[in-house]
Amino acid sequence: MSDFFYRVHFYLFGLIAIASALAFVTRKSPVAAALWLVNTMFSLAALYVMLDAHFIGAIQVLVYAGAIMVVFLFVLMLLNLGHPNEISDIRGTWGRVAAGFVGLAILAQVMALAGSVAPKALVQPAGAAAESLRELNAVGTIAKPLFEEHLLAFELTSILLLVAIVGAVILGKRRAS
Image 1 (cartoon, rainbow, N blue to C red):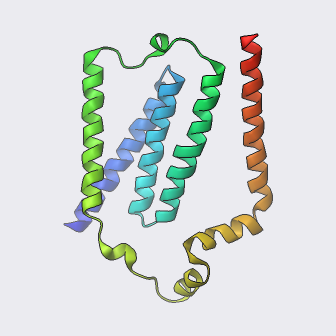
Image 2: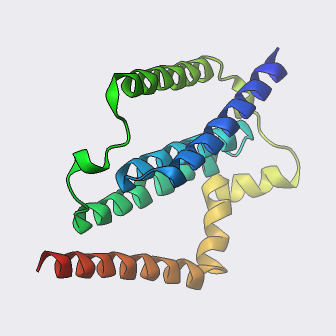
């Protein structure tokens, strides 16, 4: 039963991720597209958690669905793309009803997963992996190579994001003038 439960949810979150990604690339509204991208990121985080990569799932939500999408939406708001009614994606009552049902289905899935969390996540690994985790813990295992071996790439990525935000602000100011 447990294997069936996880297999069904794995395929369900995979289908949600694919459908959300398709909705992301087909939206006219950049804000709606960004929200579909957030949905894709949450589905991918759920897949990571189901694969027992809890830290990667949490980082997926915090960094991509949280910080990067906030910056993306901030840049969109700076560009002032027009009146929201002109670029709306959901038109009519049936679109809102369908969105409500999808939201309730996702909420039911989250509640089912929250109710079925087993203590298997608390099981400690054995052998050399256990020693490594005891020394550095899960975050240290990822942070050590990131800030030692790949520090230059990490800093260049942050500078690239900063330049992109400054460029968007400059483009937004030019349009306003």
